Image (cartoon, rainbow, N blue to C red; front, side, top):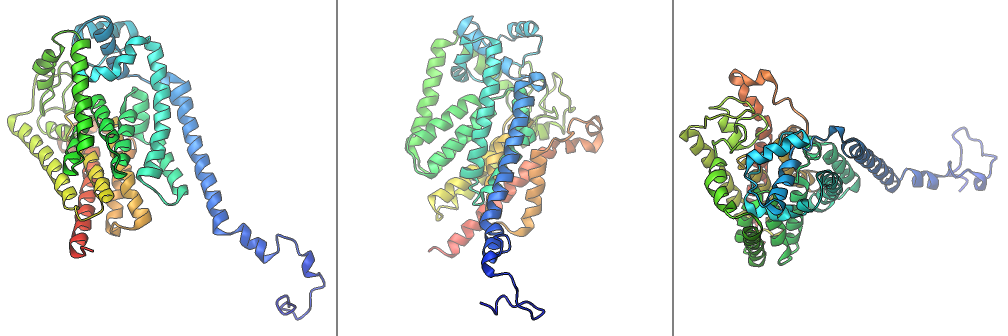
Length: 455
């Protein structure tokens, strides 16, 4: 023991070992700087960062509602009021416009099918001011739940410190704040899809199908997830989805005014086709429409958010349909080729591939709808961090895609509305497409490894 304490100058210390301070003890030093202690400190910092951003959102996009436009809430609210209280068609846009003069705010036309009125029924029981607060409180609660699901259940980051940073990134992302600003139902839709994802991964029976059906009622684009249920032969979940959708359609026939379904099929639905101008809405070439439909429409129509009588030529419409069918087909083939992988792996890839597809093939995909690709984005990032399943050459395009999807971009700048610069308006479309291409590559790579090594 004396040799261990021998000083370099050759003199023995006069201070006994027993009186060494705990701070000078090698064991204490190890305890202070141990990886476990450092990890706990990082977790505390990340948690504080997450709570700071959530507090910021609660204050500026909750308590102080000056930043909240509630742009989409009036369409949901007054459609329910007109259908269930006044007995009028929710597609009576002249009456809808009159309601806008009362609240001193323009109201976007309601374009969803009558079955989507069923989950909006609670709005017929409350005042408009109450509905606004319900949306604000509900969206904040759903955002926190979504952050947990994406970081720790879908993403499954093994380092919880990184998980909290992922949560913080979600909170301050542009799609999240835009969903809060516009009082959209995106958080509810994506939470339902995440629950279906987790349920199918753990082989739950009916509940994943019910979750998908509820998401379809709120936003029609998740209907392509039913193809995954067929591919995976999840007949219970598929039956549950069809029962909920059929039941909602039946209920809406009794609750909604007569002729509502006929009006939607004959007037509204045709205007939602690719290249068409939606009824009483603006051009699909509007810069905020970041789907394939918006990308192709900007080759033929001026990128303005104004009503127009023009439509995309037949060649442009056909090109959009080919892009949509091709993207859905490639996603399904890539998932099917993983049949030698574990069932959980196929479910992960299936959802991850279909979420960007769901965004890009929608006739109208606004910037706040970018939240729909976050599950795929975070799941792919967790593969990079935890399992290193993605080649390092793809990290840079993945990072660029993350930034393009998450950050605010001046896609409506007047400079981009002239000449060849117009196609830069679709920058977010390219970002989502790059994410999807990386996912297809990783899925194909995994399937090839499985075929080479069947064991």
